Every structure is written in C-alpha cells, then in structure tokens.
Length: 119
Length: 112
Image (cartoon, rainbow over all chains, first blue to last red; front, side, top):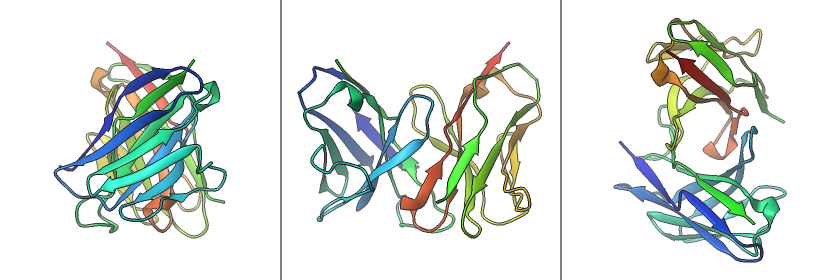
C-alpha cells in the first residue's frame, strides 16, 4: 500500500537554529500533503496544506514565516522550523492523500512523525 | 466549529479484557467518522470508519457504531491482546481532507 516516510524521526536542536523535516511519498505521487502538529496529550492540529507547484495554505494562527513549507516535487514536501525556540518542541506529522485522489473510500496515509526538541 | 472528544488515557487492561474507548463529536451535518491507531514508532493507520448514521465499522476485532442520536462513535473490542497496545485516535471528516479533525488520542496498554 501507499507509504509516507518522514525524516528525521527525532531531532534535537539549539534555540535559534532552523530544522528541516522531510515528508516523502514512496511509490506514489502526492500533489498535496498535510502537516500536523501534536502537543503532548493533545489532538493533532492541522498546520498547513502543502501544494506542489504553488504556495502552501496555512491554517489560522500558524506563522508562515516560522514554519516554511516547500513542496519541491511530486514526492517530497519539507517543513522548516525557522529560528526554533523551546515552545516549538512538538511532534510533527505529515500525511498524503492516496493514489487516485480523494474519495469517500480512500483515506490519508500518515508518516510516523518527527519529534522536535528545542533546547 | 467541529470537534472530537475522546476519553483520556491511559487505559490499562489485562489480556482478554473488554475494551471501550469513548468518542463523541460535534459537527455541522453528518460527518464521516474514523478510528486511527498508532503503534509505537509508526504512522497513524486507519482502523475502521463509518460514513453515515447507524453504520458499523469493524476491523481486527474492533467495532464502532455511528450513533447520530448521541453523536458518538465508541470503539469496542471484546478481547484485547498485548499487540493492541497503541494510541487510538477518533476523527471526524466534513468535506475535504483538510477538514479532518482528531481527538486527543487514548493510549491503551494491555498486559499479559
């Protein structure tokens, strides 16, 4: 089945540095990918929708300049946390629609997530 | 706006015990409802779903029934196994996939 790979799975960085997280669709193309953020014991919250060939669509309250999203190809989307601070520490998860696109029967494929710890 | 509320964990059970994880939703109209499971170190996987009232989703011994009158979609399993230990997320979907809303997740730990 469709697989989404995230890298790195765990990253620790110093405050003020930038961190890039990659999300790849393996063996299928994804013109759209979704980035979520999950705080401990809380829901996954959609941050933005990544669109291949155009700008990402950010949810209300998400800082575009803080969380840079680039959908570089049909199989790769990256999330860069710029000038990271401890409050950015979280679990970031990406997902992609399945091959064939949306339908009631098709569901999203999720990556395993990337845990960011900012010291 | 739409929301999903599920019971807090962790839920700790002995093997072969009965499992219920409660989930209720608020939504405009009638959303599709899902249960996802996340095993340690893995991505979220769809466990089961229901797209309309009174539908029952089932998979791997788990079941959930879409109850419109109580706006609920409780997850049940008659006899849990150690391998069921994971985090379970209830979710609702109204419209495009950018409208998928998750509950906070419930961690299940099953002991031999």
